[in-house]
Image (cartoon, rainbow, N blue to C red; front, top):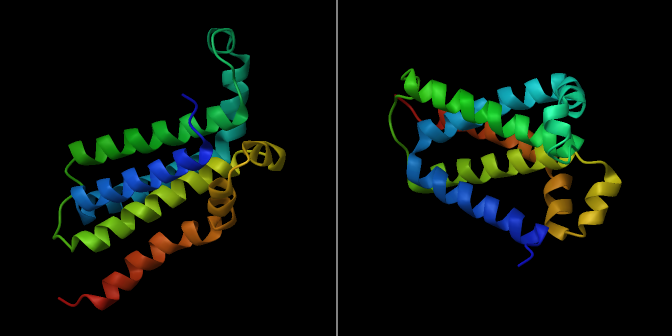
Length: 161
């Protein structure tokens, strides 16, 4: 069975939207913040990470090392480590919000992750995927970068305590 990139994009959006709705606002916000941190790290040091991985014989002899693959794995790994560490440290407390809102945060987390990952590809690599959804997500990358922060700020002003 050969999975298309369109199906992959839809599965990631669906999975993170449902996951966000199930885990609650504070946890999905934590994941979004961790994703922003990981994205900053990979954007700043991604070329160094790729250079290390492609020159490290244990990795390059056993796996096909591409810039997209290395940077995406770094993004996922850093986000995962930050999320696990923040949950263990108890940095995840607070009140809850409706399932619809947390689902929206999950959707935005998926868009941020996918748009960041696709930005690690060159134009010709994205074109070779022949996927309308990849192009759609990539074209909305600025929206996916700002929308979670704007939603967090907007929801803070709407709710009164």
